[in-house]
Length: 173
Image 1 (spheres, rainbow, N blue to C red):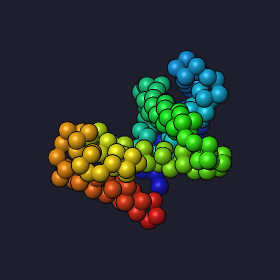
Image 2 (cartoon, rainbow, N blue to C red):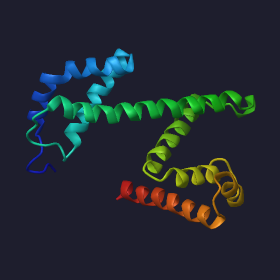
Image 3 (cartoon, one colour):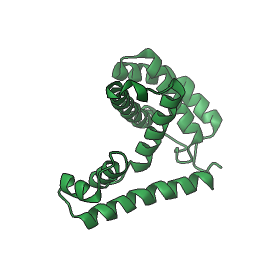
Image 4 (cartoon, rainbow, N blue to C red):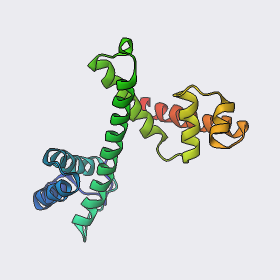
């Protein structure tokens, strides 16, 4: 449902026709890839179509598009970094642990979803959770690694688990 002050699809179509090629060029200069630029330019306008917070009137439409696109570029780089770390971990794994392409895709999507869920937590909370849940460290090992107390580790892990739990509830509701 659109709010009274938000852009309607016809306004976004006009914004698209006026600024899409400029945005694609701007993204291409930052990403170095015409394909990624085209994808993210498209994603920028799709995000506008699904958002209820787009102002009805824009004095600086390119500045607004740049802000939305910068967030998407940041997500793109974070996803690429996470994917590279996963592929590097797979390269160091024994051959008997080798996964099928489908299994790799599922694990990568799960990691990306976990990254999205933990985004916004304090770095120490996020790190405590990852050390405990992904690396299998005990609370004492996490506390030592991060230079914090065991009760803080427990509190941080609960905080991260709550973030994941309540996000999961909002997806199913």
